[in-house]
Length: 325
Ligand SMILES: [Mn+2]
Image (tube, rainbow, N blue to C red; front, side, top):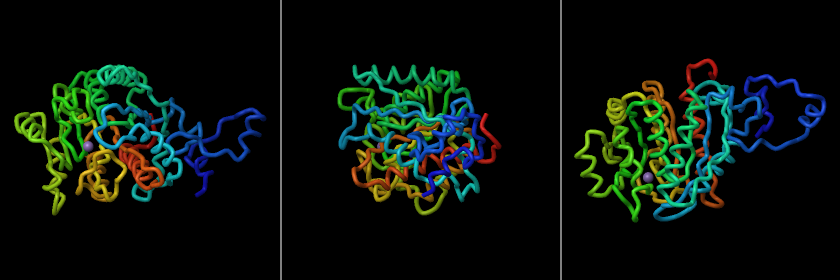
């Protein structure tokens, strides 16, 4: 661990000309800033950042084990200790600049009110962020619908959602609300096509919805062996612009035990990265979210996995581009 790699010099940026007292204070042994990757101010200023991280620690309708409200904080904390250099990409994706916003504290009036508030907040954010790559950290999966709806409305066009998930989330209603995590994808079908990958926990109702809708294409985990043919199938269905929603229960629970409703089977690390890199190379992925991490006290590997995954998404997004806008 070498904390000074977080310094502006370490990310290829120059330090500003602070006054003498700031320079003196800057020499003290401060811990890493509590933002994504622990970047210094020069490497994480909003204006010069290509990527923006939006923590949304929202949790109201989780079905089983709780704790996804602690997900964003755990991801950001773990991210402060991962290496900035990426040997797969042969560089430090952090040079594009990664800004971390404060967490959104949504109303507690109810799921509908909270998600409407998120949708309008996300729209406002898109107006300010321009074409910066927006990465939302959940929180429960219901938040994705608000972001997707905002994307479609601001762009004035249908988007394609690439959903990596163990579950289809196509229920019309779940436990008394249409704004549940289990309904996230059903709520966007009027503004988006959905390509669900890795599905292995699905109800009969959802199978019927998928069969009856041209807007839904599901690739079951059962059909993802023994080769990568499913990757071509998914890519064929992805029409730009693409919004990526990554529910961490997509991954094998052996890798990702820290989630509310785990399902056996699912993606492994390298296969998942291989697929995601292709998606970013071959399609225009305009924004993404990573949701449903519910940190397990005393077990930090899953938190680090998600932090690294988010950094990989940023790396893939900007791979081959010189600098941030
Ligand atoms: Mn899920």
